[in-house]
Image (cartoon, rainbow, N blue to C red; front, side, top):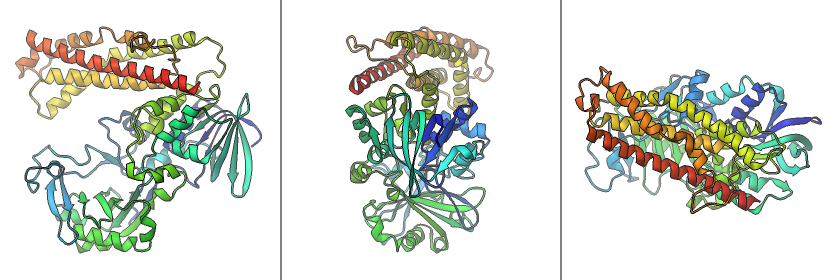
Length: 545
């Protein structure tokens, strides 16, 4: 490939594919390079004996707090299924005793009678999770389907990334042959630790960036999953949801759940064995999984079709540092590392992506989509720094202000949606108060995510703990809470649904004062979070300079 690309994406997971969509729509000259012989990254869906999809990587998304995933699934027209969850779980805590059925809330508590069923509507193992009827592989297929095959290059291992002044040079290996690709901009949509361990950067990255790459754990790096397909969901006939926990010392799977869908029945689970121990059990793993399933659900569980995936054996997922730190592994979260990794390098020619670089949903598919949105925005910015930082910030803040103005116009819809949800759940206390707080919290959360995507130069010195840009970022929100409260009261007064709730239909002065105090607390939390993000951006810019 001798020509100069506009953008080269390295990594064919959800982040890379979502970004490729926007580049294709903008008619840029782009190409995607993936080390595996398949697309999807950590998304891997096998097919069971009866044709049922079996997710061996990411399985769930949560519509209530993962709006990007919810929107994408809806836009793609993908069918979804609710995760089976009746508030109870089989608990196998003795290797020689049958499992007990316990309430989820009780199973995690230190006191109380764990044999009592969970009260209706209380206790949830999966928190409203949903799966795709065709497995998460259906999401990858839907994202890849409109992309030209000539732009998707599989089996390409990236070796080195070189700043060539006006472009970036990629050294890749395909089979036994090495070749070079040139691009004006490069996006590394890879787990940060995998990029740090496997790539050679010329010149070397700043110390702060290298440290940030190492500091961010890779989600699922040392995990392993089993999925077992069955002719029918026999456990449901026995009154079980398929949820189980195994906590004794000989456990093979720590958590089991129902993985059935429209195409057939299945159970799946996460390995309880550390990554370093699993190779010793590789040959006996089918028998061990079968025996544990039988202990949980009876002899019918022995007749399954097992599929097994050990992510610790995948160098494109698990780095040496992930292996070494498995015992201290935690979910990657936002912080100083993500702030640093969101900064463009080499004058904007090198960008980091992937789920671990996101500020929200870090490590999850939601984070992969958030990272893709941030990258889309960055790639729309010109490479040349023709304007001073102050002018560039002014332009970005105007865009942010326009977005806030749009959200202000829709704020009452957020309130009404949450009010109707509360009524449908038959809640009857503090309806206005709760709905207003939830509406503003969701708006502020979206604003923080939007703020994360803005390439602001926030490297001015802080004044008494306040970032220089904080007043400008917060200015478009002034008066929002008061205005929303007025609109909410007006809506309540004309709402037939609230006519049976006089306290809400015509809220008293004392009730309104309480609501204002709550909204002020929500505003203060948002203002502090926005300021903290801008301070971290400034620290990251200073460290990377």
